[in-house]
Image 1 (cartoon, helix red, strand yellow):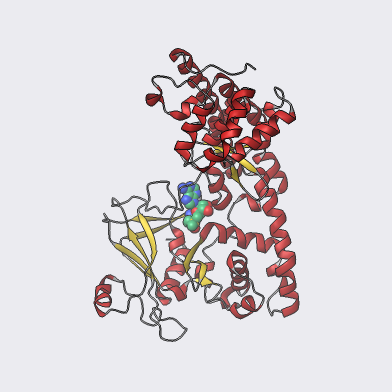
Image 2 (cartoon, rainbow, N blue to C red):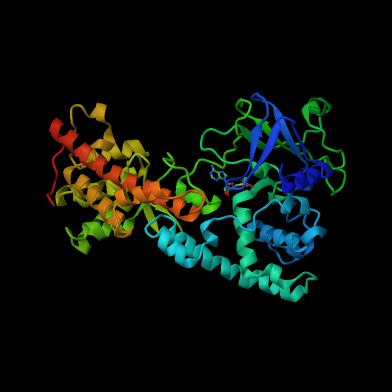
Length: 480
Ligand SMILES: C[S@@+](CC[C@H](N)C(=O)[O-])C[C@H]1O[C@@H](n2cnc3c(N)ncnc32)[C@H](O)[C@@H]1O
């Protein structure tokens, strides 16, 4: 066992963190720390208990009162707590835990701007990471720099520099857990040593809720050997149950024990945790509404597009929204969000069908989603395919024109990745070393995954078109 793991185990023992003998901690020079099962473990086994007082949170940190006085909460406050405890070195009560952590996690936030521009161009993350860098710098300038200057902390000021803040944020983003209402988010030693596997986790991490009934207290016999002091909150004598890790799936002897960080696409995973998973079924690509309108602008006037967009909105449709953009999701299998198909369908409606839709807009808008779509198609007098009950209402939106735009959107969106083809990206990924070229590897997994979704979007449109033609289905209202 590595020296840092031995020191961490000693620290856990003296801080009331109890774990099953069946857990083995592995320290690999290439892949970091992971947890394995020494023997077979069964679903329902309680394998770890962690007193909340051993977690590093805004409340437990030695700088708690200053953070509170400055009104810093959430991840920003936790990053300050982490920077402070790190600055204390061996004097920090968490030293045995902190010495186990990397200086920073390799999330795009801590990549250079040049790396972000070169590696993430075109991907869902490019703009987001550039904004993150800007906003976090502003947070540092506005909250952390004045805090350190005004309070004349007895620790080195350079422990609170902008680089240290970004490093702390990368650890908070990749390792923190929500503990409870009182502590909020915190660094949870040991719970943060389990790696992630999508949809195949073995453990769940839980915060046990306290019950005052004597029966419930008796049931607490399974709790591992955590010290009574550690289980009692420092705020009066309110019993404060520990955090627990419980097996939710059997693990064979020798196998790695995985947690889940949630079901998310590669962009979210790389953003928050600094890694990706090939063929991640939760991957998505977003198509901005501006791009949709731009794509249609070669066929229709601005006036026409504005009128059709307004009708779509009157029917109570919208895309997904963030602070400053509206977009449509394309799922892993290439299926576009229904709202996008409806918008395109309305764009291509004949003037007569559009007028009828406008007249019926108020009553249509009030209906639930499924009924609204059926009634909308009836209003626009789309001839229902006799087999439509087998193909689904969504298919009725896939006219030749709509499918054509889907293909165009896919090509234009794909152009944002630069001049290399998908095939070249796939070759680069095959030749890339996951360990030595970590940033390039994960950026390529993200890029290739997104471009494959766009290719499936093209296939989605052309397959539906072929099927529709074979059925002699709905005719386009207007040819491109
Ligand atoms: C909560 S920590 C897990 C323990 C970590 N391996 C360590 O060395 O301390 C989360 C970090 O572990 C790594 N990680 C977790 N699951 C991973 C996976 N499936 N593939 C690659 N890296 C993973 C990432 O670097 C991530 O930011």
